[in-house]
Length: 177
Image (cartoon, rainbow, N blue to C red):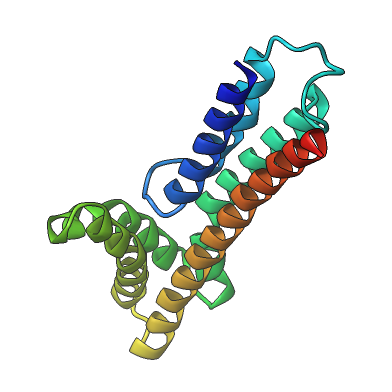
C-alpha cells in the first residue's frame, strides 16, 4: 500500500509541475498535495515513514506553496510598477489577465489560454497606460514589466514544484538505500 501512496504522491507532484503552465490551476498546491496524501494515508508508524516527511516539514512546504501562489497574484502588478506603470496600467494588466485567456482559447484550448495569459496582461497594461495619456514608449515599458513579472512567477512556481519532487525523491532514496 505504501508504494501506491508514493506513486500517487509523485503523480500529483508531476501534475503540479505541468499545472504551473495552465492558467487558473494552482500547480504548487497540487504538488504539495502529493506529500500530504502520503503523510495522511500511510499506515506506517512515524519511524517507518519516509525520512523528512513530518508534519512540520509538510506545514513549511504548505506555507511555501501559499507564498508562491500569492506571489503569482502580485508578480505582474509588481513587474508593471517596477517598469514605471501607473495604477491604470495595473488595472489594465489585471483586466488583460482575465480577458486574455478567454480571447485566445479558441486558438487551441490550453496553449491558446497560455498565450492569452502572456499577451493579455501585456496588452492590458499598455492600453491602460495609453488611455491614461502616457506615450507609447512608457506604455510599452509598463506592458513589458507585466510580462517580466508573470514569467518570474512561473519560474518561482516551477522551482517550488521541482523542489517538492526532489524532497520526495530524496526521502524515497534514503529509505531504499
